[in-house]
Image (cartoon, rainbow, N blue to C red; front, side, top):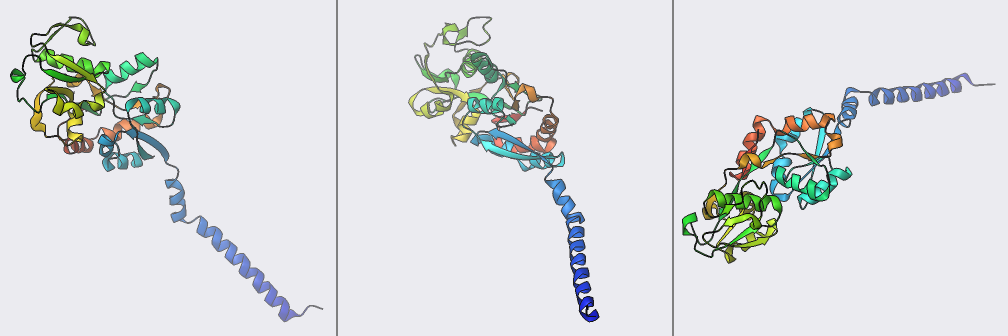
Length: 280
């Protein structure tokens, strides 16, 4: 025979367990937990840059806007544009920001690739001539040695700058000139052609160098060494580079909106001290 008092205790225990289970279910569906789940629903976007423009790509102004639009941004620093392009094409990253359009076009042509640059551009790279020894173009002596980048797009930019300054004359109609296209060299300039990232280090050893202003700023070299700058900014826009197969994905529009705001224009001007000019 079952003792009534004992049975009542058992029933109370059962009801207590049911109450606890119900409370846990309600707690797991509380507003705070639902909000947490919504947060993890944001898509992750991986962007790359070089160390110099990390503060631009990882900028809180742009990243907060990306969050509002439904994306979490992770930024990775890679060594150079070639590595970035390979990562974009392989799907390891969504987009990169470093190379200018002519460099990307030369890469695509030489590698038979098709990486794609988004517009509007995020910034333009200022390019100039710099010297430890001379203050003006006119002071450069006969037989002066100039270091210029050896890659096709930056070499062309250097030679076009020298032509603008009246130091050389190039063959007409050549879109991407090399030193072989120089038809007049009245000062008998000697050209030292090296990798673009090594140009600045040669500054003490030559009469002048030609390079993007960003290399001077990133190496903490005084800008009073600037002799002149080029007037070709609009031909050398820098935009996010992506795999062309992804250009219609929703995150692409969000990326452009986030990085071309009025706030980002102010950030670019503040961070780069004139070596980058906003492109929007």
